[in-house]
Length: 402
View 1 (cartoon, rainbow, N blue to C red):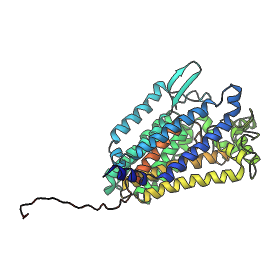
View 2: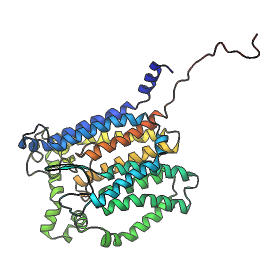
View 3: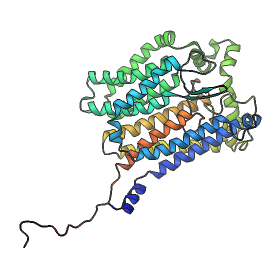
View 4: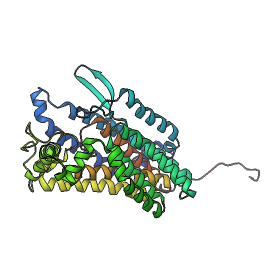
């Protein structure tokens, strides 16, 4: 194959539609984070706030890594599952001696400090990388047992495979990430063809264990956040106002945007020091709703639906189960995070700390999501149909030549 032909196929086999859509969505997210942190940057005498800068840098590295990953055979990557599992588990276990968490949750161990000096800290969130690692290792596990997947032994082993990272992440007090892991697990099991009776049994077990989960596993602040949404009368007025403050401000901000929004950099709540807490991260959708209104919010949701649908389309066209599982797992991951985050912002779900894909500030999330997109683009590339190559052999000598 000549150099020109190789370049031709490299371009033809790259899923530019998905790639460019994700890049533009990240750029839009960076603009929203810039708007949310603009006053903070001005007050500090900076051109751009640190959160926004880290987001841009992480997304840029991720975008480059995504393209590199897309040229690697996804089957070969999945065969490296022992290495992937080892690295992810090591990072998760390092959280116990070295992990850190938000100031309002001193017992949490969600972040791993990479750089820590006076007034400057760079953290990495291992659970974000572990999501991608889980996509790879769980795909390898299902592929290994696909011919007898519905045996009780294999179902239990697959469940144990998911319980290990979910359990570690729950212990580190990162309930939001644990829920996303659970959604990926259930979605991939469904796509792989698990019999519905197992889902029915699992649903029954979960319902039966709800009282135990409530009394033994959920922290007090988790309980109060759930009660604030679904049973507010169980809380005192002062506790309710304190718990619901962030989400109530978020709903007010979204509602104030109306149909067309207040305009970029003109949101009353977004540009106020008393605006929506953490609106550069978990509540970034409130910036979209307030400054770009209903129209901007709907357009953003349409783009997210398109990204998820495009990933599913790549999975459907994969020639093997491995490619399909990678794509569907990625779609479930992005879809679950989007639905839960929007549910939080609209006060339909309790606040549990889940970022909005491509939109929220945070280096780990913006870097690692492009690893998953790179895997999807690899599935697209290695399932493309190439044109047949015409060739002719000449000057071949055989014993029968005259």
